[in-house]
Image 1 (cartoon, helix red, strand yellow):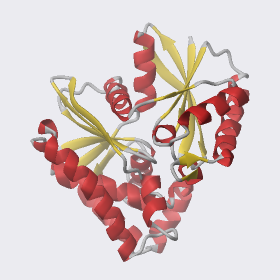
Image 2 (cartoon, one colour):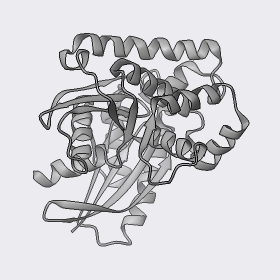
Image 3 (tube, one colour):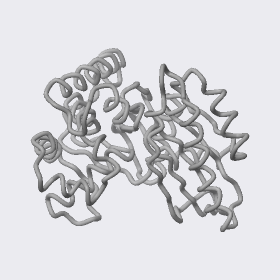
Image 4 (spheres, helix red, strand yellow):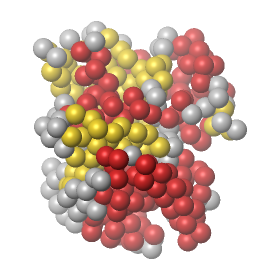
Length: 302
């Protein structure tokens, strides 16, 4: 059977198609559109233009899917729609204009699906997983192969950019603004949750477009093989410093590898840096699977 999952995020909308047999799946292909829905939110409401952009993107994906024999299509949204006041109106508009009903995931559900997505590929006994999205960041700890804490905080690479940055590369005061917002959210989370407060590990697991984009840059800059999935904290700090210095060589690499992330890469790196400091880890392993695979896994079990 072939299943399709469409993830409507704050920065990107992504279609992934899977072949499923005996509750095991493999990804056949994926298509991504950088829509930047967070930029269409005014006074915590999605504008009509934003609704139109989302519907237009979903209809493009529908035309792609019509060329294949797809057994089931699921569409879900994360912080892009759950953090707005007119989410019901937006869901209704998209249903009427595309035929797709969007399921809006809570932050905790998104974190849970991240966990099951990573576990579908890797045998995790214990560890910490984080997912930096456009409008939120999810953090999950695992003990004895089960999730211990799964939480979502309202800081993402795109909303930090919109809230704090006036141009492309943030200046000194804008970096301070980003750091204040990140530290406020993470201080509450790591300070209150028992499992997070005690959690220390050599390597943590990163999920999502921001950390995958950083991995591409690390592999290019340090001339690593494309199959490398690990970013050391030392490499993260060096790349961040070069980005803030507007290093020309690095800027060319970013425009080559992930031009759609040029404005969100630094906010994403700052979130990753702060999480790494909290856990005192030495490296980040970048997972190929995340929320979409976890969502599919749980739907198959259901």
